[in-house]
Image (tube, rainbow, N blue to C red):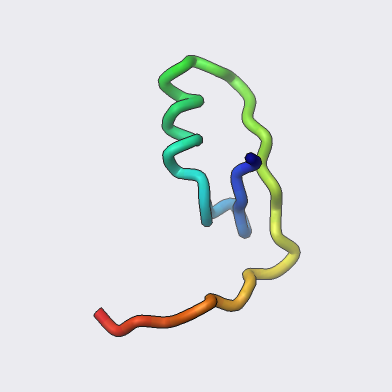
Length: 45
């Protein structure tokens, strides 16, 4: 599954990204979004 990013910021796939770094790979597939998708839900913290 590709890693999703928006304007250079990682949206999803942090665990996969860390795994790639640990394995020593030099390249990774990322899917840039033309615009940030709307959230499914918002929660107050």
